[in-house]
Length: 134
Image (cartoon, rainbow, N blue to C red; front, side, top):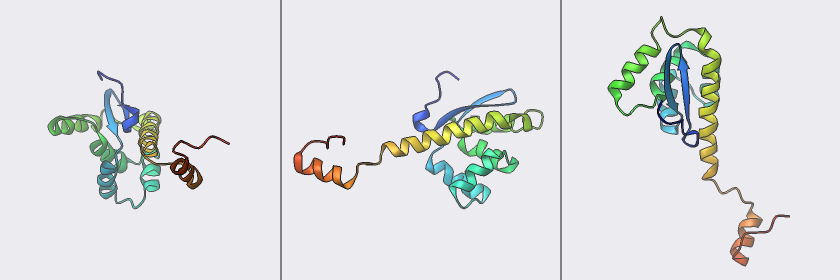
């Protein structure tokens, strides 16, 4: 891969067998993955991916892959999921990549939230400056 994965966007590099590729966790992609594996919650998706459940992993590879061209994405997925490439030996590396991608997705979401307390918001509004740490 030319550039490192952008962890701030929920990206992570993955190696399965002899093939390197990149995944990206976004809410839109999680919706597609949830529908594909019939998962009802984020926790269920996460547990099934960490457990290296074969159907969940296969669907995640196809759903979360980062490729500009859908034909290329399909070709990479086919190679990754070929029986002579993927095995249970890939589970540990897969888990690390999934954890990194989910952590990046969550961190990116937290950056967009206002985590100040009601007191801090009111003080900033009244005083016109951020509240001093106590």
